Length: 606
Image (cartoon, rainbow, N blue to C red; front, side, top):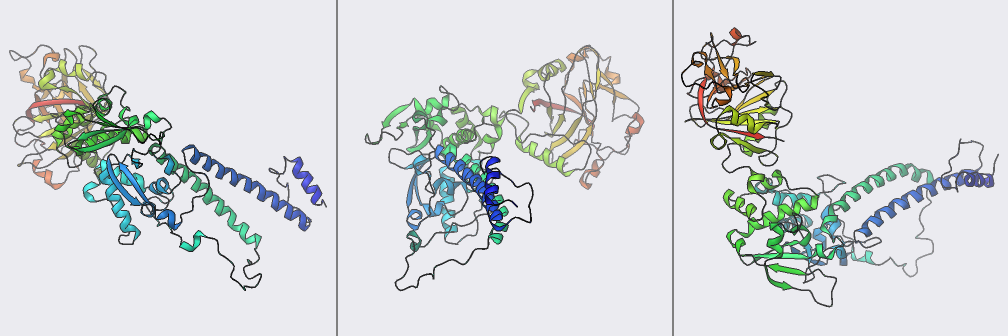
């Protein structure tokens, strides 16, 4: 039976005693051998835990955080912190800011990263948040701290306003607990000093009871598992606060401000230049200098603060300027490009025309992010289409309907501008997919849309039959037919060539005949022409010269609600033309199956 010396030698031979594992548990080992084996294992675990702690502390210090443990004493928690929140002065107690234990805000304001925060010329901590959102959050946290509210809930009016909701959700996020929150435990004053032994207290009264190592060891796996999980959560918190701290580049950390009707809007130089050093945003914040404020010369580490005056910003209220600055700031914090969803979700209750004006003033191109102001397609239409597709149980639903209009959803064709001919249309949409076509019925203003999964390609004079799926929707109604929704889909598409029209298109006005078209998608056919009109004097000889104004529309989806039933046309029998079903519905109010359109647009979706 080996003794403790043999165990130590074996451990040393196995790699210095830190990676040794017994090959078998020998029941004949004596007590010292078992204890030595336990100690070896504990040393390995302790080394691993120490390394984990060192990794976290190394990352904290790399962000400019203080080393060591930060004890949330009463004195620390009672400190009043002063902030410059994008140009607005605010203050709050540290205990209020840290009341949601484990949140991003508590990590940022817990005391470790005070010196890592950017400061303005008045020694106030700079925060890049929407000032209205942060002010509201401070108030809610104060109520939560004293128990007047049970949780932090966004107001209904602000849930869809990203300028407000993004920062509230960002700062209250807790990777450890999801949406749940936990109040920080403020220690009593007596915990600031170690307890003293009272005079006359017998020796040994403070001795701890004997520890049962087996019981302690049984809890160890769960403790380590939770520690490793919390390590990942802590890294998420540190990742979240990193863009809110000093970057290490004094030029980027400088604060630049503009004056809007006497109100200051402040961002960092890095944010101002994030769209380009010579961008309109950068020029408005940096080059229109009215006055320059420098911090005290005794504190050279403070970033310089520049206040700008640009006469053109006096045409837009400060709320709009703040929203534009916040859009750019959020993209910078995330490290991503600005998206149409970023811009559209930041509109809040603003005036559409004024919001577009503010975007264009700072070169964020309103049409690019909001879609054209005169476009038929709206973000609300896309939301409705998504809802209809989710609500109906039909085969082969479209894989992706965008969240909003604006890049990459871009208008690439408008008939009243680009021309009504088939040639004008297919030249504009060539090479783009997926596509969304939208048309407006003349006189009634009803809107129809067709989502097409593949490109519309015209490669020669002859017509073609493509296995391209499409889905049709009615987007706008009339008083006589107040019904909208999904109206059908098709697995193939008929496409005219430059010379030949697409033939064998069902004529729903006459079961015994067909019509020709330049584009047949099943529910909507464009540039329909009756067979009798093919030789009509003045009719275009080539398909490329056909106009797109005359359309045929039909709803073939049988699983419709009762409100559509009045529009069923029993006399029309698609089975006469080889279709499986015989139920069709009239989608247009009083125009019949054939009708004219007075506007037609195409959008690329990617």
